[in-house]
Length: 431
Image 1 (cartoon, rainbow, N blue to C red):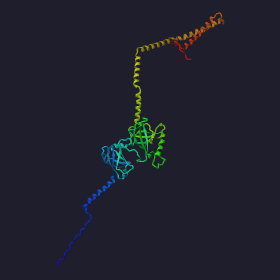
Image 2: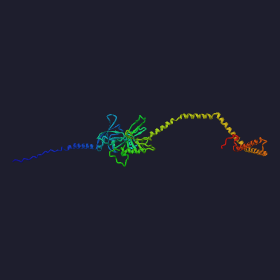
Image 3: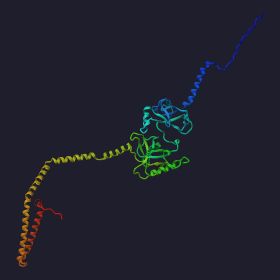
Image 4: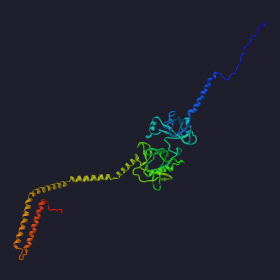
């Protein structure tokens, strides 16, 4: 009897696309790397290189980059430039600000140098400077030149109107990018400072070119020019203000220690002036500054005038006169003369005291004598009876006797008024 055959079960082999769980780890690592790469592209942003003259305390991953006060990046690396005279800073700019990385964009350091008018610069001396980015027009760019202070206004920043100010004194400490203020408001910057000598007149001046920002001048009531040319409108404003006494002067804020700047304001007692032109650029008249240099210059003028005085010669003359006076005062002749004068004055006083009591009787006696003479003349006339033909000499004698009586009476009257005449003699009386 044949037993039945058992059937074997056969397994079917199926191929799957999944390589197995063992491969999940490398796939996950690859995914993480890809995500980090995408995140780096999105968040780490663009890398640019900015060249500075000095590192000024910048530090990688510590020095920030700001745009209008908002952080938009930081410094990733600092190295010496190939020429050995500059420093290259690698900046990591957020991807959202890539649109501002153009050829006209400026980078400068805030806090690289102490600025007493900017408190943030004082803070930067301790914490380090920050890099400020100012967007500008142009083509996309990744390499820039940076500065240690705010750059001067240029047409790349918008419409500007340029003027020239000629300062007679020293202006060498004024730098490009220095502030220009109109009654304390920031309205522009200095774009050029140079030395100029006129061979014809021999005048040595310091022409300073400034750029004014029309948007900061506060012009109201007039629409902006359609063609973007602000020159006619700003020139009209400056002509009127200059005619009313507007002048430019160098100043410092705070005084004596702050950075130099150009201040536009009205000067007291300023003479009439116009907005002249220099090589086609209007010139704003200037006045002397009131800073330390001007004060020191005035003090030097006073010192020079004092030095020109003959102080030494005058002192020697005074000493010579004093020596002569001292010699005279100590001379025996002077002492004898003074003693003689003193004795003479004492004698005069004694004589006056002796004579004064006798003045009254003397005056009375003189008047009595004059009266007696008058009586004698009267008696003689009565005796003659008016006929003196036989005695020709008698009338003349009577006339002399009458004159004598008159003189004696006048002498009595004078001594009555001036008894000291007995000692000093007679002097002319005022009429």
